Image 1 (tube, rainbow, N blue to C red):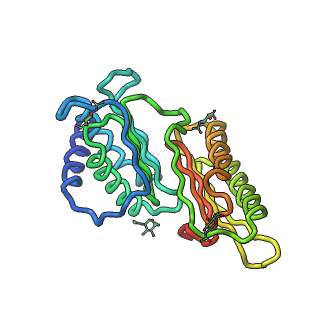
Image 2: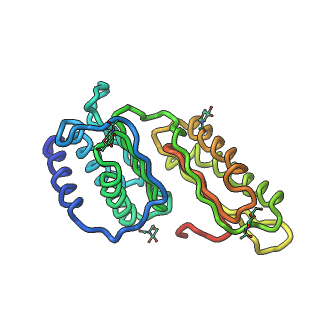
Length: 246
Ligand SMILES: *[C@@H]1O[C@H](CO)[C@@H](O)[C@H](O)[C@H]1NC(C)=O
Ligand SMILES: *[C@@H]1O[C@H](CO)[C@@H](O)[C@H](O)[C@H]1NC(C)=O
Ligand SMILES: *[C@@H]1O[C@H](CO)[C@@H](O)[C@H](O)[C@H]1NC(C)=O
Ligand SMILES: *[C@@H]1O[C@H](CO)[C@@H](O)[C@H](O)[C@H]1NC(C)=O
């Protein structure tokens, strides 16, 4: 199959996809930015191709990176990335990327740049070539409403776990790590955590990105039973219950 016919295939199946009604899962967060594009113009056509490509590509490995450019920066080129959480099955990944695509196009109509986050995946696109760069411009956190009883000790342990996972994730091909840490004394209290980067980052930048958001925990999630911080390039989460698929 030539690349142009596969583009047509992606585009057609994506057009069908957009017409399908999804059981709406609410995203955690979305943001729209950049200039407006011209409806039915070449940016929109390129964006549709990139999103369709991501929808088909991402479920294979949980990560997709696509652009319509062969390296030439031009205002009409579109660049996109989709990432599924490391434990998510490829069919759940596909569902999530489909929902993300249709939600973001409806929520950021005519905008050249946008990002959306779900539990199971994230999707981002731009007219700017952002591959391989840490994007911490948009940062978002979600925290549990419940407090822990021993915040100083708990915060330290959560940070310790996430720092270990950051080290692991940055040298793993999937750039994803999950684990748990037993809290002393109680015998059964455990912190569960995960850390993940988009795979266009270098090992060093993945680590930098994760350390940056771990450093943000005291501002967002001090003494909370659960917390997460997400950016365009990396994300972390911890909870006192197992939140990943075993
Ligand atoms: C983009 O379009 C929206 C709605 O059509 C409008 O409200 C907004 O001002 C436009 N933004 C720019 C930067 O032109
Ligand atoms: C998210 O993925 C997990 C693991 O594959 C799955 O159990 C869950 O149903 C998915 N959630 C949604 C809303 O699709
Ligand atoms: C983004 O990361 C850079 C480099 O690590 C850092 O200097 C900057 O403060 C970070 N910005 C935000 C908003 O976290
Ligand atoms: C948690 O702690 C904060 C600040 O110390 C307090 O305002 C809040 O009411 C507490 N929440 C619960 C559920 O106890």
